Length: 117
Image (cartoon, rainbow, N blue to C red; front, side, top):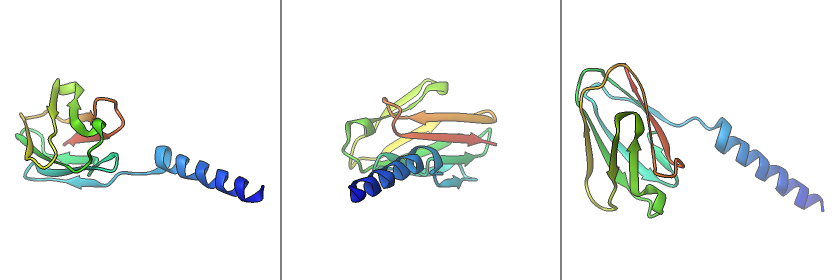
């Protein structure tokens, strides 16, 4: 009985960490070219700082076969792209104004953010 309680507590701690305490890796790009790996339920990096007023090139490397990783959506920009495994998935985004732009999969399980400065 004690072992079940310990395992339950560890599971609760893991869930709290994953959904509320985990901070995604952040990267800054001065040339506005960023490589993003799509794997294990996350975008890596998930937070990207770029320069305002320049075209942005995002290269998605989809390594996850999960159906949720098939599409990336930028709702504020009205942009979406199908991501093919083992293929070059380059997305060019025109000049952006200063601000924050979310991106995610179609079910909003994979999440990321463009921070334009």
